Image (cartoon, rainbow, N blue to C red):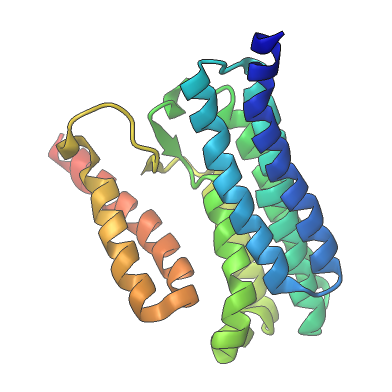
Length: 234
């Protein structure tokens, strides 16, 4: 009986992640973007905890893995995609606003691929869905703190489409990226994570919420440069 209950504890956190995503969608439909963004951030914490707790309790399972992906699709794929769509409506975009569907579609594709891709056990290939979802959610705060920057992307049809296409393709592009979760190993093995953490602390202290898309770009570009330099040496 106790073992059966113990196995469900990580799933409760995963379902909490899913619930945050569902409520975020409801809030987005009511144009309460900042509250929705906070829920997506809360879901990120729950998403981190479910795997951590599963490993601690030694109850990791295939069902939990699939449930996690389904929850991530709702919270970090569908909810941010709908946020983009409503941003487009508010800024009076035409057919360009339908570019939002790419984020939902390729998030689904990435998560399905991730569950089968044995190459992504210690690192990522393509930008993880939660990171993309957080980056999109951050624009709920940036629209208030940096309205001119927000409008330059979300009130311009071409820029909006380019934004949606770029972040969606990066989900499935074959770019090796460092995993953000630390596992057993020497400290020197995590120099990329340490570099990213240092950059994050400095950037957040200067730019606050606007730091999130900057960190996202740094995470991707630095990985591309490091991989290019590494492959060139071979």
